[in-house]
Amino acid sequence: MNIKIISGIAIAALLAGCSSLDSFSSSQPVEIKFAGAINGQPFACGQNYANVGTTRSTITPSDFRFYVSEVNLVRKDGSTVPVQLTQDGVWQHQNVALIDFENGSGPCRNGTAATNTSVRGKVATGDYVGVALTVGVPFALNHQDPTVAPSPLNLTAMFWNWQGGYKFIKFDTASSGVSEQRPAAPNGMGPVTRYSVHLGSTVCASASKTQAPQACQNSNRVVVRFDKFDLAKGQIVADMGAVLSQANVDINAKDTSPGCMSFPKDADCPPVMGGLGLGYDGVASSGAQRFLSVR
Image (cartoon, rainbow, N blue to C red; front, side, top):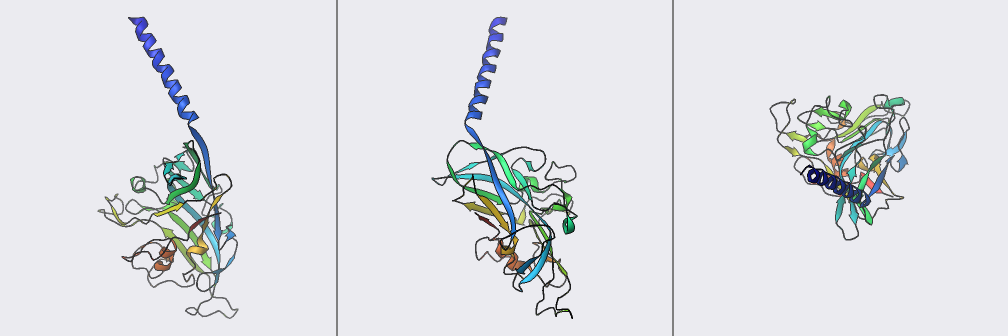
C-alpha cells in the first residue's frame, strides 16, 4: 500500500514536471521597446524643445513617466494574446509596467536616476504582427496605499490619493514662449511658466480622499492598438509634443492647476485630452489619440 502511494506521488511529480516543460516550450520571450519624444525629437531632461503648442513655444521638460497595462500582442487574424509580464519587483507588477524616461538629472531632480524604456515578459509561441495596450493602471490596482504597494506602484510622485488613484501620465515642463495673452518681456521672452499634464481617473465616488471609490465617472485610460508593429525592430514612441499641438502652454486658466490635471471644468484641458483621444467634461472625443505611435 505504501509503495503505491509513493509511486502515485512520483508519477504526479513527473507529470507536473512535464507540464512545466510543455508550458515553457510553448511560450516565447517578448520585449516591447518605448522611446520618449517631443515633436519627434528624443526626450532628454533639461533639453529645450521649440515650436510646441499653438504659440510655438520653447519648453524645458522636468518629468516624463507613464504606466501601461493589459499588454497584448496581435495575431494576423486580428485576435490578441496577453503578455505575461516579468515580475521584476522594480518596473513591473502583475499586468502593470512603468515607463520612465526621466533620469533625475538637471530639472528632473525630483525623479529617479534609473530609467525604464521597455515592457518585458513572455507570450504564447506564435507569429505576431501588432501590439495593444492601455495607458493607465487598472481599477483593481488604482486605488490603494502607495506607501505599502509593490514597485512600481510605490512612487508617491505618481499618485494623487486613494480616491483618485495614480497619475497614469506625469509630464512636467516649463515654458518660456510668448503668446498674445502674455506680453513679451523687454528681452523678447515672457516669464517662465510651469505647465503639466497629469492624466488620471476623476470624479471617483468615495466618502473622502483617503478612501477607495467604488467607481470613477471618468476612467481616463487610453486604449491603444497597432495592427502593424515589428516586435524585433520596432519602437512605440510617446510624443508629448503631439499631445500639446493644439494647446497653449504659455497661459493657464484662472484658479486651476498649471496645465491640465484631468479634473473637470479646466479650460486648459480640452485640447490636451483631445490629444490623448479622450472625451472631457461630458464632451466625447473628436479624434484618435496622438500620444503613442510606432516606428
